[in-house]
Image 1: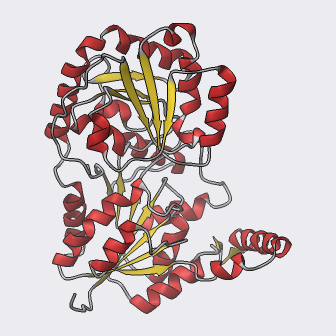
Image 2: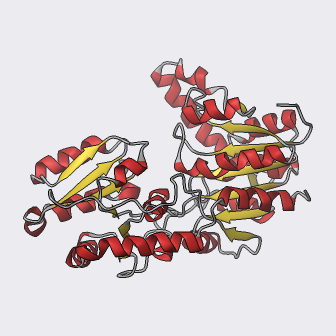
Image 3: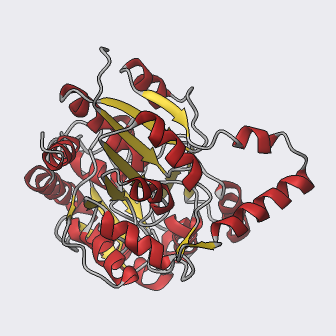
Length: 395
């Protein structure tokens, strides 16, 4: 790709090799390149061998580790490593000129001074875990936008850093949220309204077509897709529900699908409770193939933005049983295209019971879910994001 003086930097706060929060900006990159911009991605613990980053490199995207000193830390013996971590945390909370000094600030500004971008996109896994990365943009006077992929009711910004975080939001050219819930909760957490903001859907990676429902000769199969991370995804709630005698006696199986740190704990919990109507599967790339063998989606999440797996299930003609977390109730209407309950054993059990009582209607409800997606979710949200940003840059 020909070199250009026009540059956009994308900074990702995602700690995983590649997370769902990165799909939106990842798919927007070709649209920026068509407008004549070179792209650089900055990320902590950047795994350049991951398939998504290999593909981006082939597209001419420059990939850079945000904190190059981390490889040095990995080679230091454990006791000294702990001391360094404590020291970094202390640095992060030292006041300087009535503002907090962020430990990542130095590295962000160093990179940005070298690249000299016209614009920066800061993609956050939640609604404030990337604000320290945006702080350098603010200090250098480089225009930036914030993308928040989740907001959590029980996880609020630290009171030590809240004032600076608030200022980073105020100075942003624009703020994007993936659900109305996330936008409203963020406003409440920072005590201000965001006039320069909008809700934008994540991109749907699967083709929008109704996949025929599988037969029920061997019972009904529900897919619970997501990281094995209890604090967010709440799989333990579902295991307790499935341990009840009434669910043990019914022809229903839950497939837990994903990867993550809590998988072993969930398996051990299942064994302890003697639950035999659930199975644990690894993450699968073939979502279309998955829906050929499963009848509905089920998500007992404690916190969400707007789950990609929910959008994908609906686009495949599947109904869903979901919690009230994040934007779920913004796209699922109880009893119409799915079922909604609170993320606790009692209320979520009632939601599953309502679904079970009308299980012969799941196919029709899945079709209504498919219609909702076609009528409300743009075919290319990533293009909408790119156009919004380019308009703000005067393109």
